[in-house]
Length: 306
Image (cartoon, rainbow, N blue to C red; front, side, top):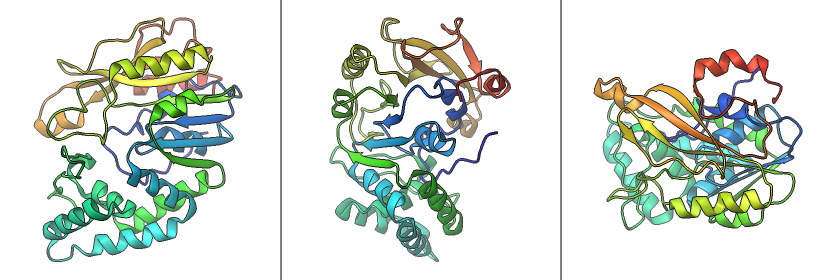
């Protein structure tokens, strides 16, 4: 039986749709703690916690306000819901002007709940920062963002599965990798190659390919199992070169038509790349096979991992 998974923080690049496929590679009863160093919307943590795959969880991120938001969701979801509702209702007759006012305030006070409002209200739920580290994404003029009543439900649903067993940490991912211990399982979703540079960055800080490889090498040396979401392709565009097989086994997931392609009237298909740790027992013919999400839905009944 699968459960409805809370999703309070809308975030472009969230692995919410891929959670079923990703969780299918996590063996039951092998590890006690899930560590997600690039939390974002924490989709894998929320899905894992909903199904009680681990006994404890660590979510971390380099964006301080985002970690503050997760701590509030874990400990005091009512305050988040109330403040979000107040921000959402500030729009009234002048929604665009209100958005820019709240964005300017966030760039001064870095309020966690203002970040939630901006993510829910901005174009494609896509965080963007200028070179000075200021949030500079525009408002979506076609919609008003998550309704406060629905947001309250999602916040409390996330709180119920995370409270009492989840720690939210602000910091560099490498410190968590270096502190990894027996019983840990890592899910890593770092910025892809070619998506964290340029004038308007998608992330508060990028991660080089070299640092990613260094992190995987450390985890392998410690025999810590992991799953890495990294790169892939969309239509004719490749996000980066494959990692060496000595680091992990690559699996390609057919995600289907991309959101951007749909908006632009194109048929580009997105292929997500997963790297599965050699320390995870998986089916023998896993190497370099392509799966669609529908395939995973049909095959889950055959897996004994969850």
